[in-house]
Image 1 (cartoon, rainbow, N blue to C red):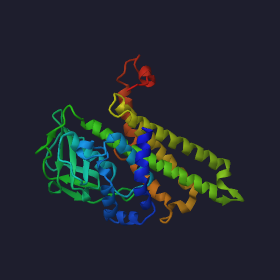
Image 2: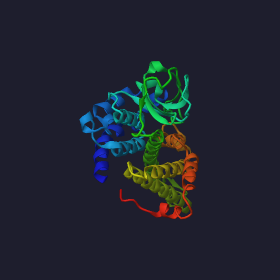
Image 3: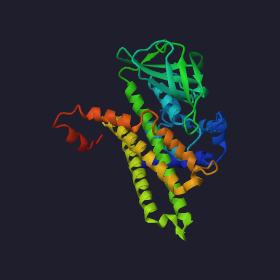
Image 4: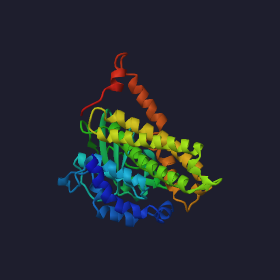
Length: 345
């Protein structure tokens, strides 16, 4: 895993860091798709990170994809990263054609599939070449690659200015759908999306912590650095602790992809990173004071993503409820072994 992290970070950092303080964010928030950065992303082959080598991919699997997502979260890359990586991975799993296009995965939770389904908050739908729709109908899981002529998009965005569009399907997704039975379930795909957002959040948390520590070290008030005041040190210590816990949680989840503990550790990662996001953003802005909110200062680029991403694909309360319901299924003697048993998978 360490070798994989090093390989991806050394290569992808060169792509992302040049955009971390550019005007690409302004144009993206104004509604323009970052074509140049996307083309560079494609040219370097990053879209095919998760695909096998026989599919002209990098052969790094989901684990490599998640490492790339964390780096994109750290640099707040203003292009779609998580969704197209997972979208292409899903298409490869069912043998659908693989192309270097922007495909966005969407999981429909409603078991009643009908015409004119409305879906809110679809990332980058306005710019997508198609939506990879996954749904369950009559107890069976289906997947369908739907092109733009099959749906209507109403543009919207999250707090970070990223496209989060409303989509109305004008064609029933059952038409032309492929079975996913015994391959991947809709709930598993939902958890993969949640982990992707957790991983990106962990990257952003690290970036916010570094900026905050740097500012507290440089900024002086009442004749000394504000980072030497005990109250500030205590807040920074808690922020660092939560950031470290978030990175540990996502590392554990990534390391258990494909094991029996996959879902449980993904849930823990989503809860941990979402809770940390709220504290980290609050603390960072309290220490930075007014400058942190200004458009010119880059802190707000990361904190607005923390506030947005913590709720996407389920917030900490929703995932905590699911985890609680899961633990209630254990008998009286089953909960403690479940909490303490380590897997060697």
